[in-house]
Image (cartoon, rainbow, N blue to C red; front, side, top):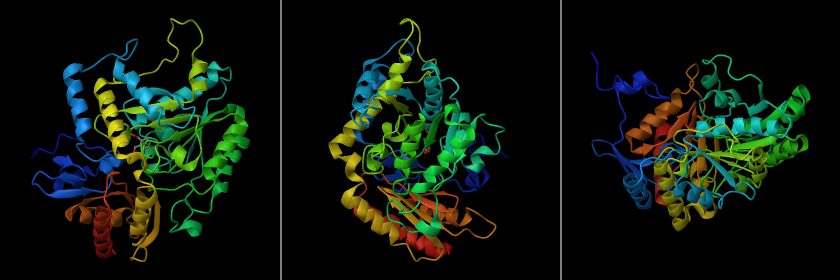
Length: 436
Ligand SMILES: Cc1ncc(COP(=O)(O)O)c(C=O)c1O
C-alpha cells in the first residue's frame, strides 16, 4: 500500500526509518522551527549550517518577494543583471585581501567542482598544463559531485561510486584524540600533520600537482578543528611548491567562526575559497568561488570576443539568489552577526558544551566560534546508533541537533541567545544520560 511518503527519495536519510515516523517541519521564525502540529523546536544547527541569521528574516524575505515580481530569471551567459554585480562588489568587501573575484554557483558541491576546474585550467593557461593532480584530505567533505567525492575523504560517500576522478591523492586527517581530546578551540598538537603534503610531493612531484583542498574546520566528518599552526604550515608548503591552496568554506564562511571567513580567523589566506549556505542565509540556493585576482587575470588573455573559462550554470547569479544574498549581507551587517560568534558569546558557548565533559560515553568535546561537537563512544558493533538516539531524543524534546557517525554537531544561528545555548546543552545533557 502506497503512502504519501513513498514518492520522495530523501537525500542522506535513512528513508525507511524516517517514513515509519516522519519528522516534519512546517514553519520557521528566528531561532525556531514549528512542526505541522505546532510544536516549537529550537534550531541548534542553523538548518544545515546555513541559516546563520536565523529564520524568516524580514529584509531577506522582502528582497526575495520583490525580486520575484520584478525579474524572475536572467540568463547568466553573455548577459548580466545589476544585482549580480552589486552582490559581487559587496562580497569582496568581506573576503581576505586579494580574493576579489567571484564566480557564482548554486551549491557548495558546485563551488567545489568549479574551484577544482579553475585550478587545473589556471595552470594550463599559464603554461604548466602538467599540473593536474588534486590533493584532498582524509575525512574531508567537499559535497557529492564526482570531483568533490574524489578529493573528499569520507568512505561512505565514496565507496559506492566506482573509480572516481583519476590523479587524486589525500593527506592524512588531523584528528588526534590521544593528544588533543577535550581541547578548547584549536588543539595544541598536530601542526606537523601538514608535513604529510611533503610526503605526497615526494611521491608525485610538485610539478604534477595543481591544488590542495581542505576545509579549514572539517564539518561533516564530525567537526575537526585545525591544530595550532597547521594551516600556516600547509600554506607555506603550497607556496614553496607553486601549489594552489583551496579552502572549502561552505560551512565556515559567513560568521560561523566569529569572523566573516575562517581564513581571517586563522590568519591564512587561500588562493581560492568556496562558499555556499550562509551566502543567502540558506533561503535561495547559491554558492560562490572567490579567487585571487592574479588567477582571474591569468584567464583574461586571447581574443576579447572569446569566452575565457568554459564553465557556468543556468542558474549562476540567479536573480532571486542575488536578491537574497543582498538582503542577507544587509542583515549580517546591521546586526553585527559575522563577528557575533567570537569573544563573549564564543566563551559562553565553549563553557556550555564543555560542561558535558564527564557524562557517560562522552569521549571528546571540540569547539570553535559557534561550532561545537560532542563525540560519543559507539555502541559496539553498531556505529552511529548512540548518537542517532540522542538526536531523536532531543527532537522529541524540542531541540534540533545533527549527528554524523557518533559525533553530535552544534552550529546554531548566529543570533542565538545565552538562554537558548543553555536550553540546547541542558536538553543534550538529559539525552546523553538516557543514551548511556
Ligand atoms: C565543506 C563543504 N563543502 C561542500 C558542501 C556541499 O554543499 P552542498 O550540499 O550545498 O552541495 C558542504 C555541505 O555541507 C560542506 O560542508
